[in-house]
Picture 1 (cartoon, helix red, strand yellow):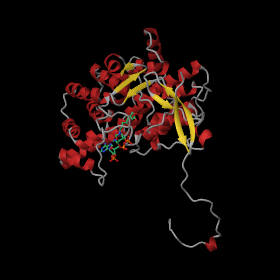
Picture 2 (cartoon, protein in one colour):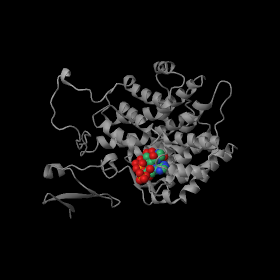
Picture 3 (cartoon, helix red, strand yellow):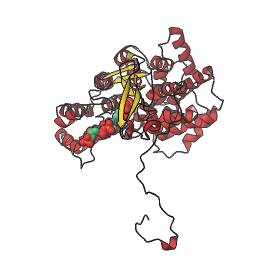
Picture 4 (cartoon, helix red, strand yellow):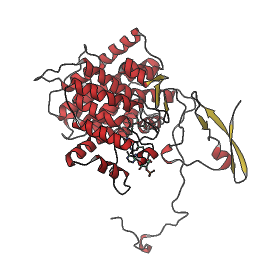
Length: 433
Ligand code: SDX
C-alpha cells in the first residue's frame, strides 16, 4: 500500500508520496510539491536530499556499512581484485573467469595512449599538478576517440578504454614531472602491476614488482571504487545529465575530486602530519586547534557527511599501513603521529559529540607513501580508484527513465524590482576596484 507524508502549508494539506529503498531507507517524493503549494525545499549541500534511486552502492553511516552491489567492502578487500570490482560496479554482477580474462585482455590492449597526446605533457610547467593534467588528458580523449558511442558494445569498449588509459596518463605525468623517460605499459602485466611498473621502472634501475605491494594497490583501489552520491559522483551525474560525452563528464569528476575537502584530503592529511612533525606540535595542541572556530586548522582525514562512526574503509586502510610498511621495511614517523591523533580525537568530547571519526583519507596517504607514491600523486590515485564508480553511476543515470537534466531551484535574496540609473546620476557608494 502506497504511503504518503502529509504537509500542512498555509492551512492546505498536501500529501506527498513516500519512497522506500531495498534497505528500508525512506524518502519523501517532493516532485509535485511546488506545483501543489508553490513552495520548494531548501537543503544547501544536499545533506538531506536524495538525487536519484541507485542500486550500485549502499552505505549506512550510523553502522559504518559499505557494500558494492550488496557485497560488503570487507569481503571485496579480502578476496577481490580492482578489475573484478570494477566489473561488478559497472555490470552489476561478478564476472565469470572467462569474462574476467576477456576484460583483462581488453584493458591491456587499450593501455597505450595515442602518441600525439604525449605532446600535451611537454608544454605543462614542471610543477603542474597531476590532477590538472589528468583532467585535461581525459577530456582530450574525446578528440582522439570521437566515434559516437550509443551502442552497448561501443560503450563497454569506451569504459575499458578510459579505465585502462587513466593509469598510463597518470604514470606519464609523474615520469615527465621528474624528468625521467616514460615507461610504456607491458602486455604481460596485470592492471596494478602495470601501473607500478610504469611509475617506478626506469632505464637505470629496473623495478621489481612485489606481489604484496600489488595486492595492497588492488585493495587501495577497491576501497576507493565507489561511494554513492559524493561530491565528485554528483558532479559526474550533473554534468552527464546535459548529454555531455563520457570523457568530458569524467574529466569534471576528476576536477570535483581535487579539493582538500574531498579527494584532495589524502594529500592534505600528509601535509598536516608533516607540519605537526616539523613544528613539533603536540597532539593536544592539534586537537585544541582543530576545535577552535577561530583557527583554520582542521583535522584532515577526520569527519564525514555520511559516516557518523568509523569509516569501514579507514579500518582496512589502517591495517594496511602495518602490512605495507613491514614489507618495505620502513618505519614512518607520520604513522605514529596519526595513531596518537586518532586516539586523542576519539576520546575527545568535541569529536565524539560531532561524530567525527577517521575517514578513508586519514591513513591512505601512509599506505601510498610506503609504496613510494609521491604526495602530489595521492589524489590521482583516488581518481583512478573512483573511475569505475563514476562510470557505473553515469551508466545508471542514462538507463534511468526518471532522470532528466539537473537543474535545482533557489531562494532569491537579491534586490527586488530596481531601475536602471544613467551613469551621470550614480553616486559613489561601494568601490570594487
Ligand atoms: C571524502 O562524501 C563522500 O562519500 C566523500 C568520500 C568518498 O569516498 O567520496 O568519503 C571521500 O571526501 C572523505 C572526506 C575527506 N575530507 C576531509 O577529511 C576534510 C576534513 N573533513 C571536513 O572538512 C568535513 O568533515 C567534511 C567535509 C568531510 C564533511 O563536512 P560536512 O558534512 O559538511 O560537516 P561540517 O563541515 O558541517 O562539520 C560539522 C561540524 C562542524 O562544527 P559546527 O559548525 O557544527 O560547530 O563538525 C566540525 C565542523 O567544524 N568538523 C570538524 C571536522 N570536520 C567537521 N572539526 C574539526 N576537524 C574536522 N575534520
